[in-house]
Length: 230
Image (cartoon, rainbow, N blue to C red; front, side, top):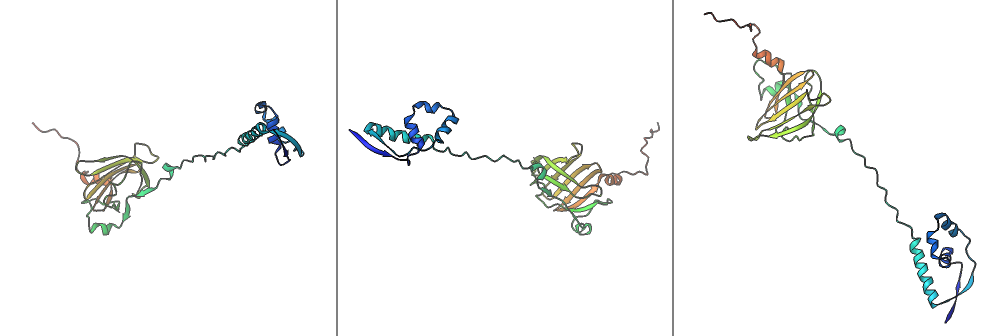
């Protein structure tokens, strides 16, 4: 049995074109498909379809909608910007200059040796440092330096030692810090000389190793070895 239906201009040109052309339209170039879609819409006219053709038309329309369904826009991944961790890493002030006279009330200086500066070095500061940490060193009468921790060792007695290199100066210049139960010690080697750090219960001093050497060497005596008389 034949059925009569009205196909109006409301049915898009793309749908009618899809049903009237062969499957080869899928293989046409993109430019050809665009020309087809841009063609003028058909005027209203009467077409006759039987049930089988109506089913085919419905299927073709479903296929067309699926084929021409806008593809989801892929979310553009933002370029990964690496933070300059090494350059912008927080620098820790582990030692702060203090008043020498106040520190002397709790911890005396080395006998006969004048410290360059007094410092506060709170307990657990050194033991809480990790590899990669950057630390600033207080002004020791010459230059100010920063160092990066490269090694950390925990000893059997519970003390902790960290070591590192002075930034931008190479491996020849280094820092070595050890923290015990109440005492902390350190050695810093810089282009301005070598310095010794000593603190007790969070307070202490920085000395020049030259001053320490002078204290223990008696330059009034000759270092010439004289043979013993027979």
